[in-house]
Length: 162
Image (cartoon, rainbow, N blue to C red; front, side):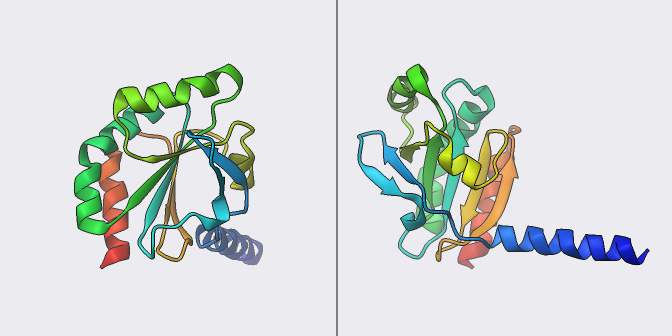
């Protein structure tokens, strides 16, 4: 029983420490080619969302399209900003900007073609969503997407701006 309790404490401690971790320093580019260091991502003291996606990932695209419908309202209410990070590689990286334009996504889109940031954060599958508080601390993580999950996402952001 004692070993079980110690194991549980260690696991919970590891979870808590990663949830409040800062973003690692990885150099990415935005879709216009500008270099961005991920440890400097911010939203002027307001929360921001990081959403990992790929052009070929249907749940990713459904999630970003569902958020798009409410994004302007979310920004007015909470000031939240979204960084959509594509993990597309090789030839698919050329499909990112056309997909963004076609869907009318108003997000800051970054490219992670070597999956450097994805690996640094230990992300295995997409879609994968992080919420960072106004100081850049990761306070929420979510893997996968089901219709309506964006409501939980904005609820978590609302808790940060209370």
